[in-house]
Amino acid sequence: MTNNIDETKFLTTTSTLKNPLLADMLCKHLGTNVMLVLKANQLNILNQVFRPIFVGKLKEVTDEYALLEKVNIKMNQAPEFIFPTPLIIPLNQIAWYMPFDPDVRISLY
Image (tube, rainbow, N blue to C red; front, side):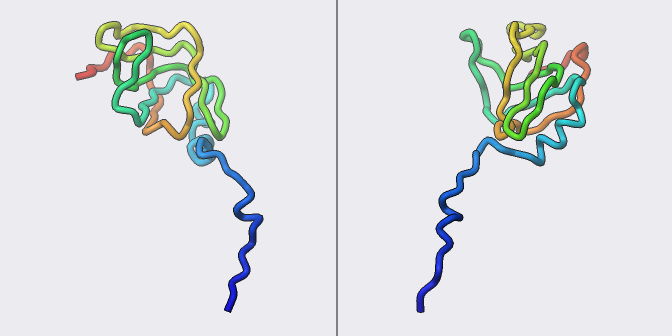
């Protein structure tokens, strides 16, 4: 007994970055300030190690990434640091998000 395998299923590739469900949820917050927490335990930018917590205005969302402007990177050494350029964050790296007022101060400990 032989099984027929449809080889076209194996020829199509899908991006591991795509997350259409999260993209749809984030689209509801376009133009508003959101807090994003990434899956990584820590990140390093400009030789500063910090927790992956970002607050910024959500300007663009695709099924692969979110673009944040005026991003406040929550660092212990510089809690009010605003990143000088927009940040593109892959959706598959987002652990959770929520609408958030950038003027609210939070404890990182």
